Length: 250
Image (tube, rainbow, N blue to C red; front, side, top):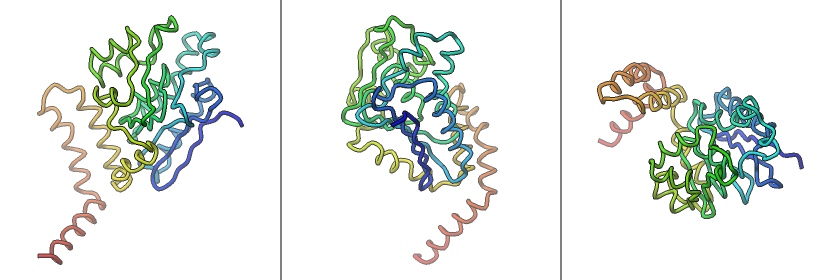
């Protein structure tokens, strides 16, 4: 079968699967382009409220295709990055269901999501220096931001892999799940139930407030989108439903 990104939109969730089992889901230029297009299609689909990214078992993603990597100039490297950068840019909530090894560019793909769930066989591996390569795609920034400077140094400079338990301890992953895709869909359920515009605005605020210096700055960022949500028909409908339940159960 042809390697591809399998995209399924169902019940408010876009499930994007890197399906290249012969290469342990290594990202070719074509797969990276397909992944970026699949993320963009999910953002355009107004029925989709969350994106889940995973790989065809037993791997999550073994990294960039080495043939493409070996021939890449700057434009080629940026083309390889495009798939996981699309996940990082995505305005919808994103979850990486890491069911196996996430190596190199595959680690970047996992790190690009808002939340990572780890399967029992998950492994997070930088591998860049092992190949004689400098890290790329923002890996050093993402790892330090998520797991702190010491874990990032251990992974990046000393090649220390993180298994599922170590990833959770470090904050790189949220939890260990036997069925990560099912768990990711369950985690996404409240986002699916939320009004889409409020959901998108909340993710924008999370990104903005992450770099702010003070609580007061965050209050200022949040107040206009909160006022907009207060004026929305979705809030009015939900408030009326809550008030009706209170009246019926005094």
